[in-house]
Amino acid sequence: MGWGGGGKGWGGGKGWSSPWQPMWQKWGKGGGGKGKGFKVDPSLKVWIGNLASGADWKTLQDHMNQAGKTKWVEAFSGKGAGTGAAVYSSAEEATNAITMLNGSIVNGQAIQVDVWTKAPSA
Image 1 (tube, rainbow, N blue to C red):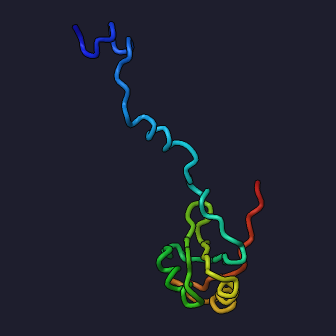
Image 2: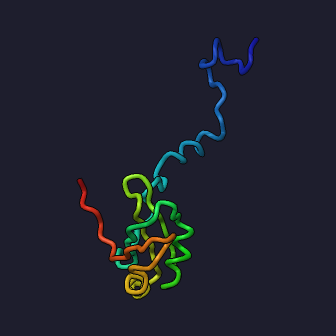
Image 3: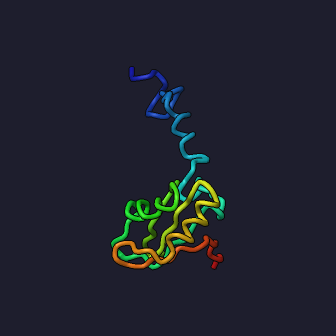
């Protein structure tokens, strides 16, 4: 006599099936992985350049909020170090940020604020 009464070894007979199996299988499909879920109209986005090395997203957000409430701010690292981006609720706020904050000082360094253009694919 054994457990489950289904023959020899683990695989024989009906065996035991986990009730969690279907849930685990769903997790791997169609999720919003890195870089997939955040599509923004380019007219709402501004490019930020000449950032000091110590500037983080929070410092940048506080500075960029002078031109209007930001929805999202990022100070890039790696290949994009020294640059960042900010997203506003309206195109008017984004245009205002370019006009008002281009040449302003963040962490002791004058930044550049310009329209967002997508980098060409290599």
